[in-house]
Image (tube, rainbow, N blue to C red):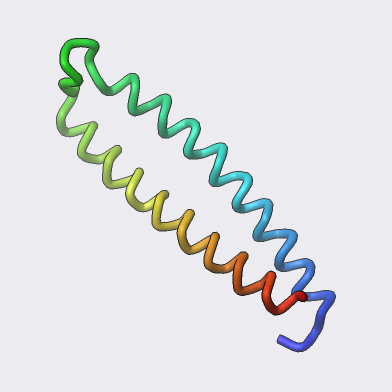
Length: 78
């Protein structure tokens, strides 16, 4: 992309996505604590925990992709 203003705006929007991702991960941590019983870390609901773990992995993938995008945009913006 040759338009520096467009790259700068995409970079700004991607940073907002990254901020949202951080907030989402805080919620994932809270949910994970709620899903685990207090006794030896056993899960309260195995089916729900499995679905949550799948969603959590997708969120980690999104975080990685967002970070890669930001790095690429930053290198093009400078």
